[in-house]
Length: 319
Image 1: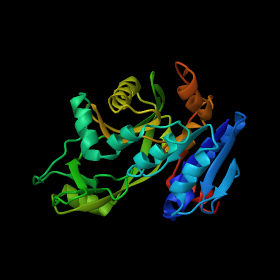
Image 2: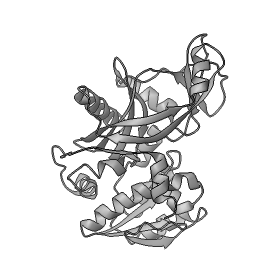
Image 3: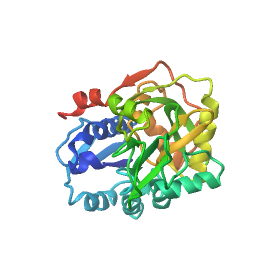
């Protein structure tokens, strides 16, 4: 098969700080499909990943090259910021078989307010969206259509602003569940996310002052060993079902007294880089079986893999 993988950071070169993560995901997927005997094509504004066939794209032409190249491929996958994913997945679906989420599902996941509402109606716990701060409490502020920990802050005070959402801060373990969503969702791993806060400002926040602390994702450990794995899997499966997700999905969870779903990523995430190093199955094979065949009942995980975002920069920053 001919497979198109369009990763936004590599394909546009707009945000150079995102290229290492994007290149890591792209290379992982491309190598897997190539190992299975498929031809892989990917748009790039300069980055080379030494797997598959690269073709030129720019920030201005990224959408058009997806449309043009998809016509010549048997299947495709787009990895892009959540706010852009619905439109780009629509372009992909109109021209080839989409291995990822539908445009509608991607749109539900991208909108933090709508996503929270859908989860709550399904009985899935998620942090409460708040309109007004209470003294002595901490809150997480993030873009309504943001991506991961992008422009996300821990605060004690806030003002309502268009385009931003504020939610209660839940104390607990920062985890994610990676799974293949479809007719019979297949959990892959529970991952421990390395979330960094600004220590000085965290202390100010804990004292009830107007503390503002940046929240930064810096890699993960996979798999994360926990006696609550099945509970986490059940939460993630319920989440992707109610949002009608398809393909690889990363469900970000704060594990406290109960699992709280804080974000749903309807596309490959950086955790895929670690998963591919501990999973016996080929990730590309799971993508294709999910769309064209039947998934196995489980996957085989051996060992563990830890990586940081900084380490990815060293590996892929000069590709």
